[in-house]
Image (cartoon, rainbow, N blue to C red; front, side):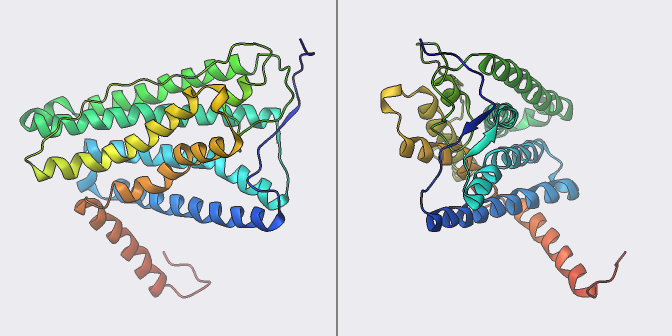
Length: 296
């Protein structure tokens, strides 16, 4: 068995080898990141400021926006910095922090999407009991349970992962630090996988347009998030390749965070009105406030 080590840094997988493609990657990810910040930021502001949106559905949507911001902020800025400065390094502490934060946000989003599915199930199938079942206390408890349980999950898995000695170098076959890639460097001969399971109960209301318009956008983001994430974590080592790992990671760690604001607002007139109100308010303030002056 090769000598085991605890490296002081890891080498991440670059998106490109040439300087031109590195800058192209930086620009592309910068655009995606800014779009995610703008979209999720508008949702957070609209839900927080508009009292009409202080309902269970929008409370969970606010939590989802926070998770999306956390997920994409955990992975994308470091990848952009590496492309901009033509580096691959990430410190041992930075890698551990990335693993921990990514585990928190991704697992919490998995549970939250399931809670949101249950919320829509109650709203569609038991509308008369909706406010009794999904009251403010229930919403707060379920959200707190999702955040708290995933925090504990992330602590345990991060501590366990980084307690293992590594025998296969420090080069990760991914553009950010995640558990499966670090486990591939460990001295163990067994390939360990993180398994995510959930039962998603969304009824099929084929004769009702409202049910389809409510459930289909949710099913779209759940399918994208779950399918790519599950395949990435459960695929056998023989199917692992740099290009496939990059493609899958972008699908479940970058794309959902950028698309969720669009998916959850295209068929929601209340949210669109609230976002438009927020944007008009800031635009009016900018017009009425001269440059380099303070407007109270």
